[in-house]
Length: 484
Ligand SMILES: [Zn+2]
Image (cartoon, rainbow, N blue to C red; front, top):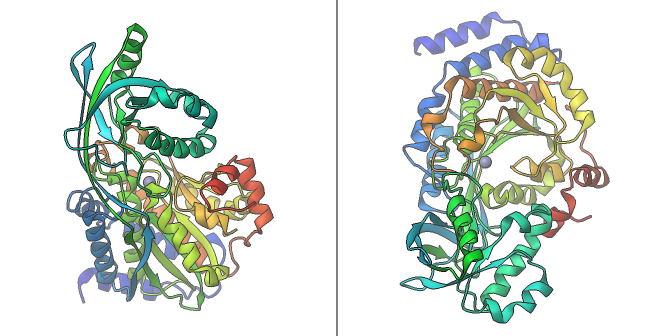
């Protein structure tokens, strides 16, 4: 027995038996130990092992597979016995190769370009052709321009296309890719949205489907230059993309379970996505979230006694392609979702923590308030937000009516690294990171230990109202995860 373990046990024996403690103050002796374990724990070292040791983890890639095996081994090293890789299938596997582009006329200059995720390669040697702007993706508009677009490189004016919102634009965009391919368009390009030609990794479809034609993003200033040159006369562009694509691919979620000490059939889930985009190393999107899940597993095991209810620790794949791993989990575990008390998600970077998003549920906000005031406020995590999003892995659980919480942190610097080559370990503030982890750990313990469930499940109608209020229902119906 090492010294640290002896101290932990000594502390454990001296605190009173918790019994049916429910008040935040009664739980505090244990949650304080949990938080201390996180603050004194190896989060930054473990994050370095993931972000620098394994690197970017594109869903289905060899690096992603390595990260799942590494994470499963980590869980086991903390003494958690029930660790599984749970598979789901994506329509296509994709790995980035090289991309280059240049304006050939009227100016001769290289362009800042990158392939869109899940875009195919150009023919060997690339494509070259005149550029044509398309700003209206309606079927009639594309039909009327079919002959004009043949043999061209289409420049998508995304400022106009996405003006009506992502949810409304996505169905048109997915249909347009098919129409372009059928109509003999050579390739498509679209502008990124940040100055200095910074490139943000993204894809052009929902659900890891292969795009029907090569598509590249172009740095913002280069894209604006192309647009201005087109007002003066014809523009010719050359584009070469080489990616590796495979057919349907199996992807694993990693799920570990700490069985509850009194009501093991009831469970809470703490989740974060393990996959990342590949420009950076996924340090904050979502290495910090994934490490939080691992660290909370370690800290809970170090307590020496599990909370009343079971705690499932989930690391998802396919989040960046449409929350695919967490959605697959809700489908594969339908028969036991009734016993899921709550889901806690973390995926907004490791900024200064604020508290929790309660995803539009007033009853959940009210239920959380005593815990926020009694346990989380002094940890900088006492705020509650009613904001509802379907932008990360709490989403599929919200659709099931399960109380879901998404960690709310300051994101004012998050967009500087989000999906960019700058999403690396050096941007992570260890203190803010650990403060967020500790808030998740303490909240999870309180919900798993509390005698009564934090809040009830709500029915389909009530979920529908939340989605409608957040203007998400139409888009979710389109991508096939929601029926009105
Ligand atoms: Zn993320």
